[in-house]
Image (cartoon, rainbow, N blue to C red; front, side, top):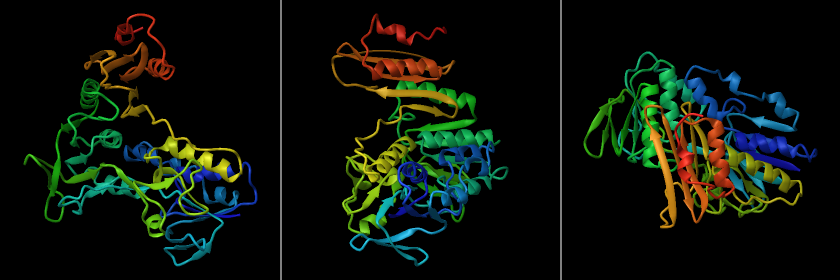
Length: 399
């Protein structure tokens, strides 16, 4: 069986490891835009902070692929798919026939469609080359502005500070950080912790309207006509799945490439996993679902009775060294809800627990120990009932 994989990210290498456990008669051609083999993309932050090298986050060399009957094509991507005849065309002009084709080509950064987004010294962070471009400003630039206050934006700001940069701003459209994971009170504690731990300025409720400058970045202007000076701007405003090839091939595409419980697309013998795949109405875009999908697909192609039913969104995070938990209903609107919360911004601690119809249904913690966060997570996952007043769960006194 000849299998062609578009992309060489975590879903691709996980699939390759898993499929070889059960099938030996499979030959792979893997195509990647990157100039180097797979590396752990989340650990690029460590390189940005001068805490790791590319070799340290690159676990597999080309010999690793060869041992798995896989030929790795670097600096070469799939540009066309003929699903009817099961043939692909690559950016270097090669044409190959396949028995199975897998989209695992991930996503690309999204730049706000605003004036100045193409100026010199405007960056994104998605690849190792992006990191090197940002690091080229170290010791030269005086004002870094990161547009986007999500997890990656916060991580980048902290990494820049750990690398020795002192003038760093985060611009967030929403009125508080991480609105999907936290409530306002928890986000306030996080903001205070970040500003005290790192030299970061956080600007909330700011809609970026344009990047100021002629050839190079000079500043960022907002919709309220206020502005900040900047000589480097980094966009951290989300990603978009790489669906162009699938769309041109007539495969069903919505936000991502639509797949069923077997991770099949609308084309015969064509599958999709990872950031590019949409299951139900969800494109997950994180590591854990990509790994889960890759493992399920390996079982599917090994004729095992496996199906993908969706992933539980990751709810335990470590953001710039600060432990966070967000699980279940954190801002429920039902009238049958009780909740108890307590925060201490000076100590960087926040806890919230939510009860609905006599059962724990949601929790948020900021800055607590992993053990305590795990306890909160457990009582929500198990739907435990309070044995006494819920306020005991948010007592900030140390054990």
